[in-house]
Length: 142
Ligand code: AMP
Image 1: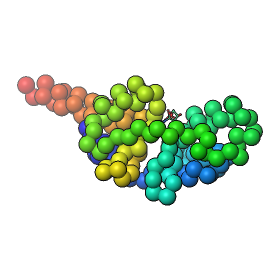
Image 2 (image 1 turned 60 degrees about the horizontal axis):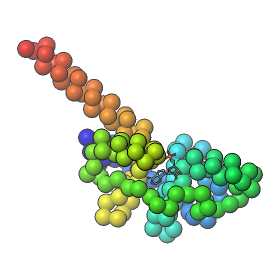
Image 3 (image 1 turned 90 degrees about the horizontal axis):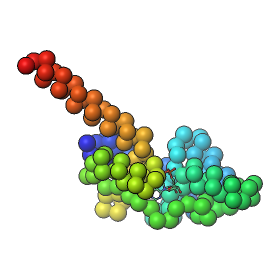
Image 4 (image 1 turned 135 degrees about the vertical axis):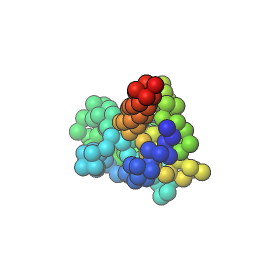
């Protein structure tokens, strides 16, 4: 299964923050939107990604002061992307190797969606179930 198929069913909406947004604003957004990460955009350019983990780390390091700091102080600047034509298996191993759970999807350097490890695991389970159903039908018919 390809990433483009997942985006076709889940849509291309990507929740974003701005580099100057405070950690408190980002924490509120993550909670309200019920997502684990936001892509950080400066105008239309991706400059980072911030996840719940970054907020927790900043809070642990700076305590209550963290809340007023800009998200640019805790985001990951070196963003790893997926492309729409990549397979779910490929991305699951990239996430496992790199130890993160979110991958923005880019086509021709344009942000076209984001997938989480939850989206990928759900797609993988559907794929495996469809294969099992196919095999069961084949065995029953033979
Ligand atoms: P996560 O597991 O996605 O909550 O993120 C764990 C750490 O990896 C955090 O420091 C994130 O900023 C970072 N991270 C998450 N997704 C990516 C990504 N696609 N590229 C680079 N870093 C990421």
